[in-house]
Image (cartoon, rainbow, N blue to C red; front, side, top):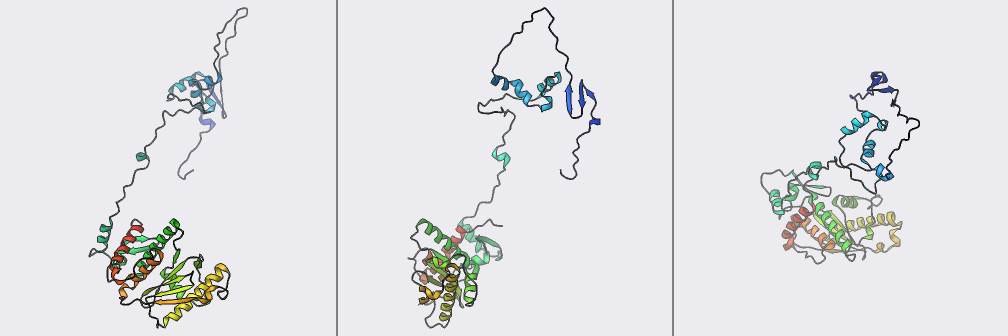
Length: 351
């Protein structure tokens, strides 16, 4: 019972003791009925009897009206007939398989429009309109325009896809997430396609800043994938590709004499050691991973502002299309393709 409402059942003393010849005692109702006349002795009284089936008696109009009354009124009385005539009962359709006939004539069915008014949402802009809105001058760079998974992208983030601009970290993670999603779909459609695990920039940073004793590992065994990709920042963005089948680490866009290479290889070995111990309860020394090899793939004449785009291009080649070219000339077009990919995979109505 909600506060503020008083639903009180009237007591016995509030009811009149008699009403229309009906006497009210406690919670029961007794109706006096005049005795039926007895036949005179010595006279033969013949009564015509019509026989009807039990089904027809049950489904008759009088029976249905009687069932519509509460149980204490299902008796023979002159006031009952007056009350029944006032009930708005329509014609009843009898269902042969129904135990309880139901009158549906007074039931009003609400249409879909009446019951659930449609909410007209603003149609999503086309890709051209969306891109024009990104690069329109005078608009706030902090305004959120797109969400890819849990990654919210502002106008400033998306503007970093413009040629010669440096990608923001949010854009890098959003692009890698789209590539990972596409790789998963390709593997489901054709199991011959390589499964690729792409680590996001935050986890990758923790991996390469951790020590040998750090308890840091992936929720799923990353060594069961064909490749594991690590985006790392070493003064510029680049990508590492760990080939789990060949037990080989590929370091892109580095020089062979870089002193940081040895440190990177040690960090990757520590990562593999933790994965083996946690997921397979094995030590790296008793597996083929103890002979981890690596190769440095040098890439000349890449501007620092293009390094992130080039790293994502490597991820695209490994995870989606192994025939994709790794050249500087295609980077401007690739930036535009990434923007379209974010537009298709992202959600614009997240606020």
